Image (cartoon, rainbow, N blue to C red):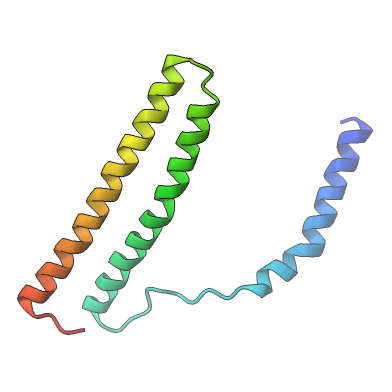
Length: 113
């Protein structure tokens, strides 16, 4: 390993050693799945999956847009970007419809929280 790479690696290790404790103690994330009731647990799991899906959809659309802009006329990359956008919207539609179906079943069966 040459000296330049070693210095960069040492600098990176130093930064991680300095800032890792500050980052780890700065954020406390409560466990979203803690519950005593099975119905509440399922409802929280559905909400967690829904939130993650809603967060990932714009990210994948942005990635597809970047891929589309950097394709430079290559048909394969353009087709890949179009497929990413198409399947993202299909997944988002399924996600929204599934949430609506769960809420419809809850109101029909009269499940109390």
